[in-house]
Image (cartoon, rainbow, N blue to C red; front, side):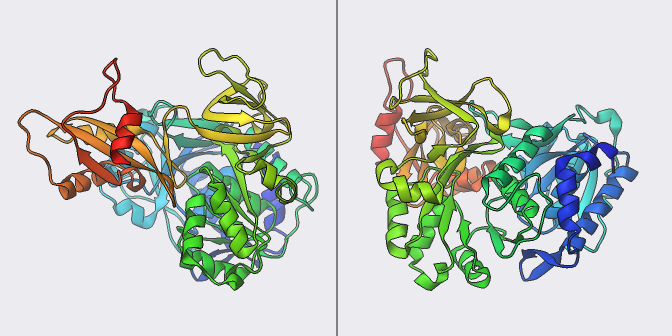
Length: 506
């Protein structure tokens, strides 16, 4: 391992916490517990393979991330050895996954053994000259190189990302996917800030193991999942990693581990409320934390009225390595009735202001405009403009009023209408498409789409069109309604009038 990595705060914390009781259980996945020594042993084996292959510090490592046990030591490897995690969403359809991989230009691709059987994956890795590495589901089995996927350095393009901890794939504000680099120093600062914020923890104190189990449902392909996972590891808490959220799986974990705090996105909260589970399932909880999507305050009230558990929302951004604002239990007790609908108070060390979308002029408290942020985990004193319409009050409580860029947030997943439109318009019979979001009780918003046929074309069967789109889009991007129109309502400039189109669906 490189000497520089051994001296960093993050590496010291990982080595110290994992060495306290190496044989004690740390990670539950499925029906099995993994010890600290098993996690570090699997990480050491991956570091050894990368070192032997000439893949040193700062190299960009593409990891097909999903909530699965081998992904935890894979992430530990990157942070322990100062390599860069280039996140690749393993849940993408095969063709989109291959395209994303080629665009990433990573020199190394790490994936679960079974992922390598997916159509096009090996071809995509071969096209960019990437070294292919497989991870076994059995952490005691060493990772190995995929036959025929040796490193071809002559094909490499930008193989290194000096000082970068994570490259997180994001759809971006224009609809074109981009990778957002998160510097190591910023990631470490986020982890230190989380330790400072949490009662009983100090980033300068020697780590210790803590009682209890934290349930992790957030996808580790997203920044909130990675930061949540690593914060619990550094806190010395046991982790129950859930592959994907289901009411039964989450409820079983609550009953099995009895945590004081647990959570998932607002869409999951709606599923839990609709399931009408017995109160005993939640008897250990003091709070339910949620984020990634707007929270309907009526939903929070309904959950609190039924179970007596406060719902604490937080608001964050990839560029800021996580949280920007959020509710504490004390703030909930003191302010929920008067600040209802807020995403919480802006975090200490973060500056927020609201500006006019056109002029950029700062607006007065209580006025609605675009949110700008600086400081915090970003470490920057330059203002960063978000695409969120927001308001800020005199007590520094932040209210998010929607997306200025028109993005649709479906159950925590951001959908750019342009991506869906492009997929629909690639169908041979379709001339033009338009997509808008509709309010949804469970998911917050869902996409719906209309289309116009080319002259003389036959209208496609909806099942055929929907199957076509499922091959082109992520599951959450597929519109819940798809309708043919003779013409769209339009503005004087001939653009599709989204408010009028939305009325036709409503």
